[in-house]
Length: 298
Image 1 (cartoon, rainbow, N blue to C red):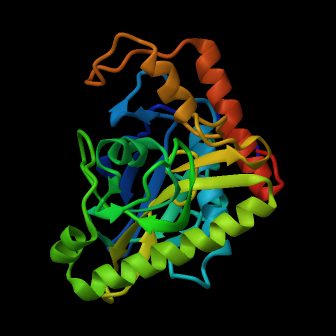
Image 2: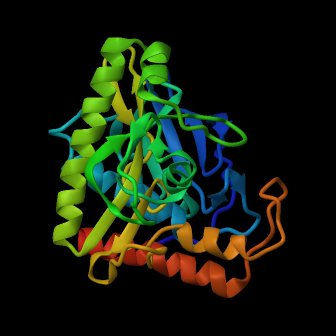
């Protein structure tokens, strides 16, 4: 597959744009199907940066498709196809959309992120430093940054359309979605993470943490939706270079976050542009993650 030119925003004649998110543009195909277009927009600290990351949308789409197929026996998902040639016009004939579109079953999104953490980093590390606790999970004292946890933990978060997502406890999650749904989503998330982390480790990659999203289709079935186990939704570390106690070399957008931390920016919109060398290095990290996990190039 040949990746298309950088795409910051899409416009598809004949289809109704339902939502333009931080990364994806969502179109209505019909009552049962949606089209997700993964652009090359990059969100960091919940702000969309003005600099697109070349080939990023293609990596997100094709890596998600890889995982959806690989983990379909664990939990059902919304993907119909990520092959643009199998999609209706004008999608199939537009070279700008090649590789970056997902035709999916339409669902009502459950507005929470189901986060699973196997290692102590990011907001989990910050919460631990403050109270030795992450989303209601009390952790042993004396842990260091990026330490592996004895067992992965489930740390749900609110899903904010704009602004910052917020970590919540399992009890708050249960109160919001109901005990039965909460238990099902937690069990699915933990099993999906476990299977993916095991596979990735065999490939030399650590999945430190990740988030899953779910929706309910017209038949009332809960489906795994959006993107899964990508450099946007996960922390990917080089297993051969793993060393707790400090930030890890990564194949995800943590590289951009670390650059932004060096700037005098309050993490409120508008976000600053990225230098060309930072953008190019980010593209390479995304492509490397895809190759390591799938054995294929884009």
